[in-house]
Image 1 (spheres, rainbow, N blue to C red):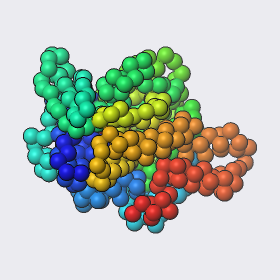
Image 2: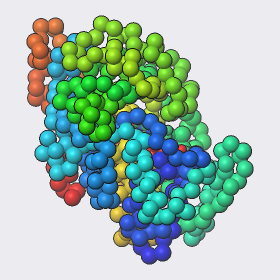
Image 3: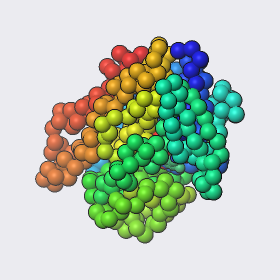
Image 4: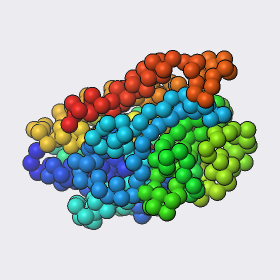
Length: 417
Ligand SMILES: Cc1cc2nc3c(=O)[nH]c(=O)nc-3n(C[C@H](O)[C@H](O)[C@H](O)COP(=O)(O)OP(=O)(O)OC[C@H]3O[C@@H](n4cnc5c(N)ncnc54)[C@H](O)[C@@H]3O)c2cc1C
């Protein structure tokens, strides 16, 4: 579509991916980010093969490869280190592209540097918190404020506005003012990073435990591996059904060791010193496992939602970032061939809303992690080093069904090429 001019509210992972995808299609676009300075925050995230395939189209694969870990396998264990299910991932599983485990901040900086270089620094504006918009027949105008002072810092007019402003999205709030804060699952997460000796093959991701107490870990930095170490991202998860639902989800809240470490005291995986993992943490953040209900509608005229603003989901299945990348690429592809902006925003919603709603709802049923609870509920205690209480076919069915739902089974990827 010629001479199109877009506005993106939010310069997070999805806002910047969208900016790069639109720029590649020749669409003029500006990103308006609320914070004063975009910093490399957060800990680990996963880029599943379907998003990697798309990030490769944006020419980002080499940069990602330099810093990230190519995940070789995903395995589920019980708390005494017995294997429930293990599957190869990425290249090891026969995909054409790797699955990456990466520091969110490293990935964010790759996107930011590419966006500044390709779009020009002047088109990535910080200290611009989106606050309101108005819409006319042929344009949309957004107003931005300084979050600290509350003063207006500018307005922007364009052909469309995309709200990629995260789980506490202002744009979503304008469409759904009654919605309230994100929904608490009853599970609290402590997320940390620790540099120590590698576990398993140094490129594996594992999950251990069950719905009430869980540990997830995976290495995320290639540089650390060159020194014979692993920069391990870990998540300790404990059920705390309380009134935390009312709290806003804050990615920057710090966490305390004593709130979770004692609960893992009698765990023994055999190949990872869990006490050392926790004690040597370089940082610990606390974040309630929250999501949002699927919405009946994302696109309103020339305005739409994307990424967490549209479909914040539980991290089970490691799909949050990847689904946002798919949103962005779908939107850009549709706009390239479009003649009508409003119809394009509707088509984008049709392609992505139901698909992501299904994943959000599956994640509420613990997604692929279901296999851990199945063993917890059904194991008679007589299994050897590998659990045999649940037939392998059943475990495989759970794993395959989730991959299909989330669009990263091998067949879906071949078709999408
Ligand atoms: C600081 C931070 C740390 C995170 N750490 C992790 C992590 O360790 N692991 C993990 O799995 N996920 C983490 N996430 C969430 C993860 O990035 C998202 O789940 C996923 O990548 C979807 O990306 P997104 O761009 O939709 O949302 P986000 O990555 O959350 O990006 C939203 C962006 O919008 C900006 N913003 C918010 N409101 C406005 C507004 N009104 N106007 C303009 N800009 C606005 C935010 O500052 C942010 O940059 C973190 C998010 C943030 C913001």
